[in-house]
Structures are given as structure tokens and as C-alpha cells.
Length: 462
Image (cartoon, rainbow, N blue to C red; front, top):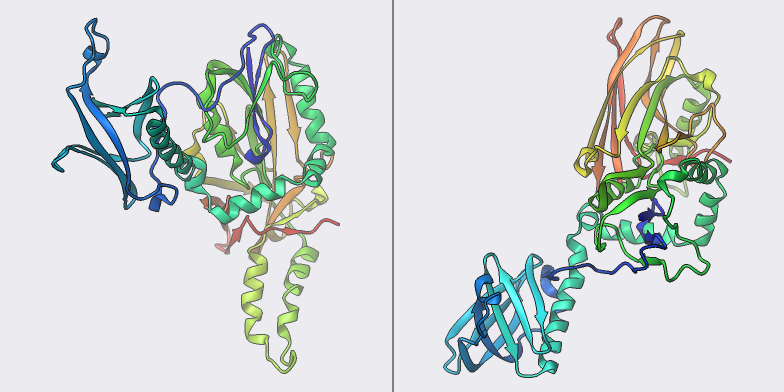
């Protein structure tokens, strides 16, 4: 029985495949089957114009599995040349007269595998070419070239395609710090809820082993790397991760969590199983005034002789683009919450590229609406019980806090009136989201909104 543990939110913390003691086999990496060659832009790791001496045979499946001997169609020594060609590597085989007898482009989709100590099989579509080198050393040199290509494959993974390199480097460095790990581990609500969800659903984990640091090296295999880039030898029974960020979606690790489902058995479980994000309008004059006053610095007309006042408007816009991470008294909420559910068992990665949450609030009190407040809950659905982890303002505080998004201009609404609109999350390559809020008081037609950058929140807590 297998358990895949993704200690989120950061893939830099490792990926673990835990096996039951009865299995007795270790997980393998990078995986089974024919390896894949990858050619990255500029192919910086591939030496230009490497030359090899080879013999060539074109083969089919019938020939490979026939009872007769597999003879080289051209036993003469040929010349194999490999060199970069734009975004690909060209492999060309020529005879003694310089006539090309075989040519292919080596890309990240090209399939190949070693055969014995001196040969390699390259498959292009339905055609395969068997290249026999003159010595194991030449095959090894060519194989090393392919390995350098394959290492570049990381640039084409789902994670790399959606993430800027600078953002990823900063992210991994941050979560590589033990101080940050300690901060999350000491979040009692977070850690204890995962602990409770596992122990109270012990039947889902019976005869399975979880990652521990003591005397389990014969049962646990650690697979370092991003889940989008590693391979597992077989499917797993349970996937465990903590992929939630501020406002649930920040850091975009939910997509990595959903990506990991490719290794989940058909009847497997995911912990957490689904999440609810809650939102509600709030009134907080002090917060709104405080946020505006942050731009007072730019009122100065003689800052070392320089007039800064022309930048005050831009500063206000910038500050209001920051979601506010803090906690609050629930009495500031002006209506019942609206809930949006993400079912991790059913959702696909692409579903999180653009998340639109429509809302209609029936106002429970009159006053100025300064923005929308957000928090989330996640559920661990096991065979025996369902355990909840909540970041609501009515529950014990977690390191996720709550998040509030201000409107540029407050809206006045009376008790009984309706506030309608939508919140749109658009994923970006900085491992976060751009947030667009549009709100309308239906009875008066008053409208407001804001555009926020979830990557750059303002931390208001002490």
C-alpha cells in the first residue's frame, strides 16, 4: 500500500513515496520505460558538433520480436553528428561519401533507450532506428549528451511553464529555511488537524507507512524534485499535501496538488479532499483611513528639495492593490458569507488558471462597505470521519490569518438591500493571482471595485 506525501506548499521540501512494510520494494526514480530526450532553448548544455562512429539499422516491432537474428542493414561504419539547431538538436548519420542516410531532430518528445552496452534505440512516431556505437565509451559519451538534454526538460514541465524563474528561486529559498518550516509546524491548528485527520481515519492508512526520520530507509524512498517532473513506479493509495496559500490560491501549489493525481489509484484518497473559500462584505472605517494614510509620505512638496506630490495618486493605487493579511472581529461583517468550493478529487489544473466567484449578498446592516473579507476551510474526507481545518475569524488563529480586499471607493448600502458582483482570480507567472473585484448595490446603482495583486499582500498583524 502506498502513500504519496507532498509536504506543501513548497515542492522544494521534497516529495515522498511511502510504502507498506509488506511490499518490501523501494520506489524508483525517474521511472519506467524508455527515457525521453529533451531539447531546451539554445541547448546550452549540448556540445556543438559532436562526432561518433556508428552502425545503423531501421527496425519494426515485428523484427524486434521475431525469432530470427536482428542483423544490421548497413554494417559499414557511419558518421553520427549531433549539434544544436535552434530549439532542437539535429542528429545526422552520413556515409563515407558524406551522403545523409538518416537524420532526425532530438526534442523533448523524442523517445530513446539504451540496448546492451553499445547500442541505442531512437523512436520517432512508428519508426525506430538502432544505432550501434563502436565502443561502450562512445555510447556513454552520446548518452551523456542526451542526459544533458533531459536535464533541460524541467523548463518544459507544467510548473516551469506557469512560473517565472526568479519567482521560483525566491520561493524555494524561502521555504528552504528551517525558520519558515518551524513557523508552519508550530501552527497548532494546521499540524494538529492533519494529525487528527490521519489518526481518526486509520483504516485508510492501515499497513501503509508515512515518512519518518528514524529507521525507515528500507521502506521509504524520498524523490527530490517538483511533482510535475518526477516519476513514480506505480500508483499510490493516498496523497497528502498542504498546498493552501493566503486566500487559498496564493503560491499556486494547488495546481501541483492536482497534478499529483496522475499517480493516484482510481479509488484513492486525497488529504485534503476539498476546500471552501468564503467571502463577505465588511465595514472598517479605521482600516480604510489607515490604508489611505500610508500614502501621506507622497504629499511632501519639499523632500530634500523635490516635490513628491505628483506621485501621491499612484501611491494610493499601489497600496490599495495590496490584499491585507490580518484578523478581525466578525461584527464588522455586513452579510452572510458566500461560499465557493474547489473539489480536489474532480478539479483539473486548468480550472485554477481563472477562477470566477459571483456573489449576491443580502445586507444584514446599513453602512459603508469598505471591501470583501476572505477565508477558507479544507475538509479531509476519510472512510470513518471527515475532519475540517478552518481559517475562519471565529476559529483559533492560523498562520493563514484572513485576507481583506478593499474597494477603491466605499459603497453605502442599507439593511435589506443587495450587493452583487464577482471576484475574478487570474493566475500569473509569479506563482500568484491578479484579483479583480466588481461590486454593485442593486437598489441604487452605486458601483465600485478594485484590482489587487495577491503576490504583494500587506501584513497588518503585529
